[in-house]
Amino acid sequence: MLDDKQRAKLLAVARQSIKAAVAGAGPPRTRTKDPDLLRAQGAFVTLRKRGELRGCIGHIEGVLPLIETVKEMAKAAALQDYRFPPVQPDEIDELTIEISVMSPLMEVTDIEEIQVGRDGLIISSGMQRGLLLPQVPGEWGWDREEFLCHTCLKAGLPEDAWRGDVLIERFEAEVFGETDAEE
Image (tube, rainbow, N blue to C red; front, side):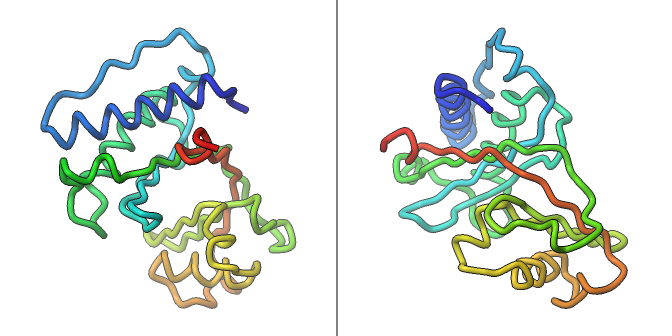
């Protein structure tokens, strides 16, 4: 678990990264000696504008130090999420940032292991792979089976593919955002 200071640092890095990327400037420096922020860990950065999704991109597993992952994923969420046009300078102040720090992946051998609200899911079949973060089913009011179906659809698979020969993995995420800091 990250403390409030670490969370604030990551949120500040994400916002600085978005501002720099949208302005066409180089990435901000991310100096820290905090071992928790230097540990290789996966993370997603989600952007919302007036409560609506505006971008979300991440690394599932740790390939960079957490602080670098957040910096890179914030930039990517702002400029490279194919579902949305790139964030424009006049939108930056309207964005709220949420960060999901990923746990290691765990293979699911029985769907009863999946706990809605705690777990995120990845369903894979061949080159097709879909991921939904732990907070998504709660936002939509889904039960376990609906969560599985929507993760299949995200992978481009039939909604009932989870009943067949697919790889189902779960993960937990420490989720925090700017709205948490305001409360």
